[in-house]
Amino acid sequence: MAAGTDTTAMMHTLRTVFGIHEFRPHQREIVEHVVAGGDAFVLMPTGGGKSLCYQLPALHRHGTAVVVSPLISLMKDQVDALQANGVAAACLNSSLSAEDASDTLRELRAGRLDLLYVAPERLMLSGFLDMLRDLPIALFAIDEAHCVSQWGHDFRPEYVKLGELRGLFPEVPLLALTATADDQTREDVRQRLGLADAPVFTAGFDRPNIRYTVEDKRDAPRQLERFIAQHPTDSGIVYCLSRKRVEQVAATLKKKGVKAAAYHAGMPAPARSKVQDAFSADTVHVVVATVAFGMGIDKPDVRFVVHYDMPKNIEGYYQETGRAGRDGLPAEALLLFGLQDVVTARGLIERGGNPEQVRIEMHKLSAMTAFAEATTCRRRVLLGYFGEILEHDCGNCDVCLDPPQLYDATVDAQKALSAVYRMGERFGAGQVIDVLVGANTEKVAKWAHDQLSVFGVGADRSRDEWTSIIRQLIHHGYLYQDIAEYSALKFRSGARGVLRGETVLHFARPRVRVKAEKKRKIPRSVALSGSDVDEELFERLRELRREIAAEQEVPAYVVFSDKTLADMAARRPADRAEFLDVFGVGEAKLERYGDVFLEAIGER
Ligand code: ADP
Ligand code: ZN
Image 1 (cartoon, rainbow, N blue to C red):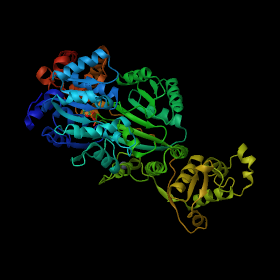
Image 2: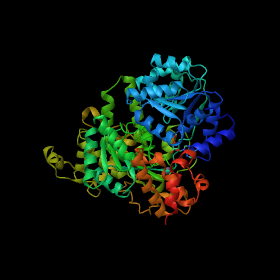
Image 3: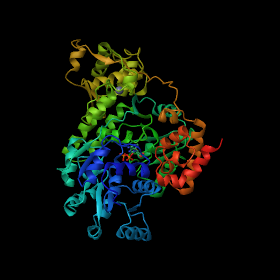
Image 4: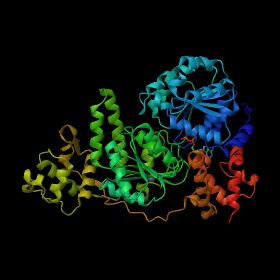
């Protein structure tokens, strides 16, 4: 299809096909640039609206747009969503039957496809490339483009060959899109894809609707349970570092009556896609997963992401938390942060890779740790990492909402440091804390630690408080954990000065628990449209959507998003013309669903 390059025509397509009434920041620039034939590198946060940057140009340039995407499930969802909007889209990947694949090829050759999603290894087959060369190609879009770089955190060898595209199709616009790239990765991706001269479009990284919270990990299962209890019917993801932990946590949640499921790379593919489908269909609310779960998750109404274990770097953390709240509604990101996590992560890093890789990963880990230990606005730390400066504190993170109070921690620090010293710098935090609080454990007896002068000097504080103090001593560079020696705490140079009383320390007062917020839960429909949403109707429309989605075997949001249903429940359209004014309704969806939904709205 080639509907012209002028802005009015594009706005028309935006409205009638996608049901969207205005561009988000940068989308217009990018779309106009690509429609005019330019290359582009697009860096936009998850949920920022990257897809539109190539889907709209696909409809305004002659020929088929070829979209490279690393994951089959992601392709399928995008194609379903496009087809629901009446766009001629299809995909080619290893999951298709030979028959379906040849159907798709026939459509492609006949010039009947606006968009073709294809796996990278498939695209780069020489026979396939030869065929494409004889066809009009509207553009190439490479999604998750960071996968081409070894600097990134998600390198995929099958992406490397994509570097040849620019040279093979010099006339065709090439777009690379990613949600995650530090400077180094970004430059590497541009070099590798032949986009060194292409303009870079960077949309702000901030996701203001996500609330970032870090809690000290004390009793993780209970902390998780409490958190999920605040989100009874919401969709959420819980990330754990190991498969074993995934299984455990999922089992515990299920026992508590949560509609939870486990997901990790060790499960057979059919079981994995079953979980993914159930999550999309809202029959599973909480997916407990390793990082294997995610890239294919396009679900816009994920309300929370919990990190049960600390991720290894901020890129990963940011990408994973970014899966929450893509619809723009309030969402939560909770990180449970334990001292042991840092040790485990360091161990994992040190075991693998060449020295240079280890150095980079260690550096990334320490940035992650600094984020978790920050006593200033989390969003500032996060955005700062991506080179973005926030003018004000965000007001929507745990630090902003419940600022830590500083207190004179000199005496506490001296107690902790002298315990470490008298125990010979040979024990980890757990044993040091046992000694401080005066716990009579077997291990204390075995080492005669109860004979030390420091035994019980810290009995006035809880274990949690001591954990926090020791963590801050590490963070501020007075102690370190020697991984080579079972994470024994050891002195750094400044520690003696503290013991001698030469240094005054101000630490954050240990937060024994982040105040259980009694915030009144704003119904999501109201939070969304801010207007008079009929709650009863909204729920009824959701039910209708669930039925239709089940019948058509597509994810619920492919039918309509929550945002669309809320807008519908607020406007209460009475006829087809009014129905078209609803956010997210284009002509195809009007045809397909207009009558049933209008009827449901008319019922009282
Ligand atoms: P990502 O950048 O993660 O690929 P998507 O392209 O999937 O993000 O878009 C995320 C959500 O934002 C989708 O539900 C999409 O419909 C919506 N969206 C994209 N552009 C706009 C817009 N201009 N106005 C309103 N919603 C939009
Ligand atoms: Zn903040």
